[in-house]
Image 1 (cartoon, rainbow, N blue to C red):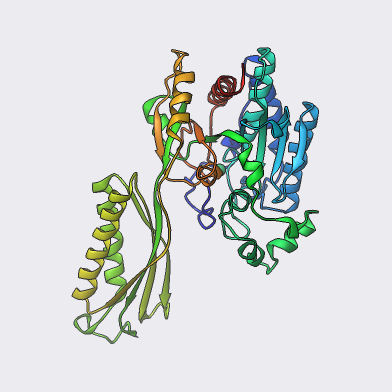
Image 2 (cartoon, rainbow, N blue to C red; image 1 turned 90 degrees about the horizontal axis):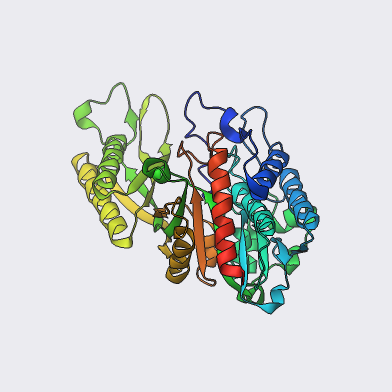
Amino acid sequence: MTLHDDGHGNRPVGVAASPAGGLSLPGPGPGGVSFHEMWRELLPIGRSSASGGYRRYAWTGADGECRDWFRAQAEARGLAYEVDRNGNQWAWLGDPAQGDAVVTGSHLDSVPDGGAFDGPLGVVSSFAALDELRGRDARFAKPLGIVNFGDEEGARFGLACVGSRLAAGQLTVDQAHRLTDGDGITLPQAMAAAGYDPDAIGPDPERLARIGAFVELHVEQGRALDLSGDRVGIASAIWPHGRWRFDFRGEANHAGTTRLADRRDPMLSYAETVLAARREARLADAVATFGKIAVEPNGVNAIPSLVRGWLDSRAADQQTLDTVVTGIQQAAREYADAHGVDLDVVRESFTPVVEFDHALRDELARILGKDTDLKVPVLGTGAGHDAGILSGTVPTAMLFVRNPTGVSHSPAEFAAEDDCVAGVSALADVLEGLACA
Ligand SMILES: [Zn+2]
């Protein structure tokens, strides 16, 4: 998933590093065995011994080690390896110039102290699925590509999916050149330091035009599959998602000498708004979160003059999201009025719903439905992905693998080995159905 600013926290107490890699038994078949070996190789790269989480930020040493690993996997399988103008890595079986290629993959970078599965599960499963297909003597009628998109999480430069956005023309070269990390290092400087040419970056329509279908396998970032009892699911859509800034302005005053009746305390209306957000989200089966707050003057003995809270809200469809956010704003205004507080609400960002290609989604369901042992529920997600970026240009689909904790962007993120192997098998089936004669 792709939010750059929520890599911290949300870690259940007592769930530390141990689940993050605990795959112990080789699975059946060549896909399962190679999955296990690849997983073990990747596991130590960029892992913090202090937190047990991963710090694989774009264009750093840990990211470079992951990228070396990708190249080694491609070359070990005799695949043609290339890096595109935006630093995304590709491994090809067959000639992509033939067109109508089937591509799978994900990303290898992480959020701060992220889990082992978000991203790497898709890349490792891609190579393992190819091994599985070779074990089945599959005959490929179309070129097959495996991709590692660069800088998906946006942990370093604050913008998610930079590699796929650049390729799809959803991020201009000027915008990309202005991206700067917390140490003041620009994206071009970071790419150059990692051995890439930042002057080469830009839209890559010819490359994307060669792709007939892109399928990204990803660990589920929620508990829908755990609750339904399924190992693997198909994505329907990425929920529309927005961020709003709520500024509650009151009057700073002495916490000891100001009578309650005389106060204009914006903290009260903010606090009531947090509860309203929870209520509105629950009623609509959506999510709404105030996860970031700034207080002025921020003194322990001062009534605040300003409380600024950021709302992140997502829902299955636009109308539901509108209902939730409108409800929260109305409640906030009532509470502000009641306390003599001024309120301004600004929408800071918005991403509309991403509907994955319906024909491709139906094709995946048909392919996977042939195996009666494997139920394949179709589910939406509140998280962004490279697949979402590409979906405007390329027919795109996603597979999710069960995550029993539902936790993501934390070392507690987990998928059982049996489920990972089921994911490899499902991806192999899908690739065979799409790319093989
Ligand atoms: Zn991801």
